[in-house]
Length: 502
Image 1 (spheres, rainbow, N blue to C red):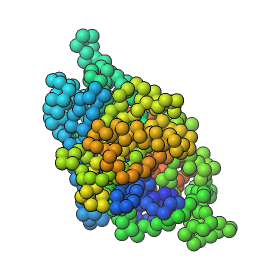
Image 2: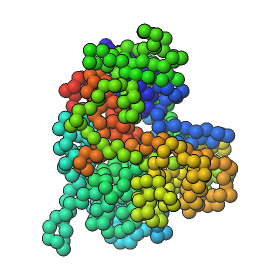
Image 3: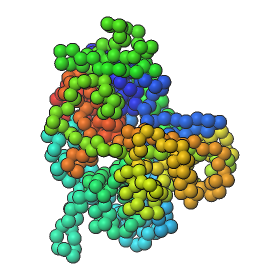
Image 4: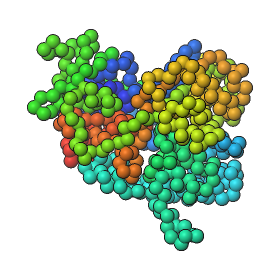
């Protein structure tokens, strides 16, 4: 079989590598850092451990499928997955709060009726029914198949259904998430609940198509999961599965270019001092029949001078994308009984928060803050301590945030979390901040929106060169990264006529 060179050891890249190795290919992964996992990172200090990337998992079937297709041991034998219940608790701007059961429509309806008033749960439940219709219409073309050559059909068609309007005696179709909130949910707290799913991916609900209703639906339908020991354990399991399938990893090895010959990608060139031993014309190279790039679009453009897309190809929004800012808290004192794994503290001024995402304001609005408190002994030195992760999506700024801004923003997140964790400030032993990559948060691919919410196809105009990971089809997020790996492997094994799993 063929030789495969993979640039980067992110989750999507490793998913592709494992599948291709099982298919008989010789796979080598070149990663410029010293570890695997991409955005699925971990920070450790003084016996505390923290996930600094994704903290929870939806749609675990994607990763279960990877383990089924690449070996005898299922995912559950390699990593312990547990359902998070309640799935989340929400603290709204008016002081009300609601805890939502995991993967239970009836339970969520009852919880919202009790917390927000009779009728609120019913409106949310009806919304989930319509969101399922959007999911059914888009699941296969957006997640399970390579991007269609006639992708504009996806860009033009809004899959979220129209809703009958009793007073107008006609149906009305929402074009954005904000319109769903205003027309169908009719409660600022339900609107905040809906829009928090978009904000988590750096999306402004005022311009995000209504098709993004699939984001809360995925969480509702397939549940919210945690990997015991931290989400980094999922990355470890995938890495070890790659090793078991004899995938080669070269860490500390920076790829400096994609080699081309006769109009085709034929390998990669790596920097001097890398771990790869072969050389040609004074440079270090790795020849390959196929090259898979698990890197950001700007980085891929640096690696090849070849034009990778046609004029008619997807043109996603390339403007400045919001970034994720994270505060890691080492706390003295045990986690109190009844503490919830995930709490979302909504912003006091939703409009100001959305406006602040567009550009760094002179006086930033307090963002919506996610508080993660996993009850996991592996993440703390002993039962008398607790590790907590606070995160928010904020406006992108050039380079890393200045130290004064970082500390001020960290204080804002801690202040928000005080509503969740009793005596928080007195319990803090130390804190660390993680400033997300200035490249911004990558959202999942979405239908409608004139194609601005789609991602470039996994294939490129350069034969033999493929894209994988959160910045290619089908977009960002752990489930989508795994799907991109499956799509790339299918395209290489079965050829350009591959149409996804049946």
